[in-house]
Image (cartoon, rainbow, N blue to C red; front, top):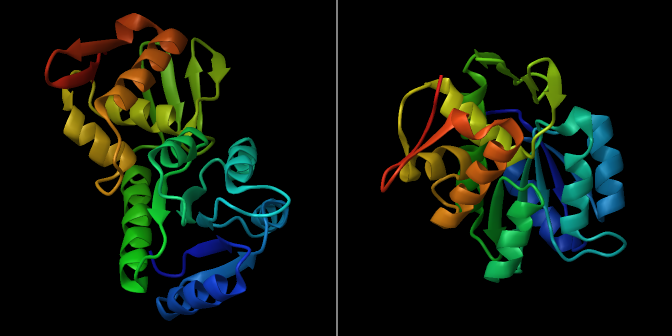
Length: 225
């Protein structure tokens, strides 16, 4: 996705300079911020396609910044990838729970970073090619406004729940394997366990109704139309 707008957020200027240089070589439009509060202000102004966000920053850390961005309606469709030296499993899990689309550990070679960014943008573009609205038995998905309607009631789902529902509703009755779900919703480069999918399905059942979701033991899940 050439010319995509990227907001790079890090409190280390040498990191900003290096990453910005390599992103601009790939024709990305790059904006920068040195802390979370500044990142939120700039994100509202420039509406980036993707935010590269450090975890450890002054004033407001990356986790809180990500959570606050996810609460801003006009930024619901913005991708967020953590780019951080924090590689612990619990930190990665916290990042995804906060609403991140990817979690990249520093140090990383510039070419690999560019590949990860392009892969994330491609996944979003592929999803956006689907119909903006998908309807089924009282449930509709509005991908433009990033909301779900159930029997006239408007629901706002967390990012990954929304994308999982969108995937399952794209082909009602089809059994989506766990591998397909992980690849489509979390990406091949992201390490998450089967329990992550189960938890998200459980939450969707609680919010939308158990009868919509069928577990195919040992295989995956399908949406009952």
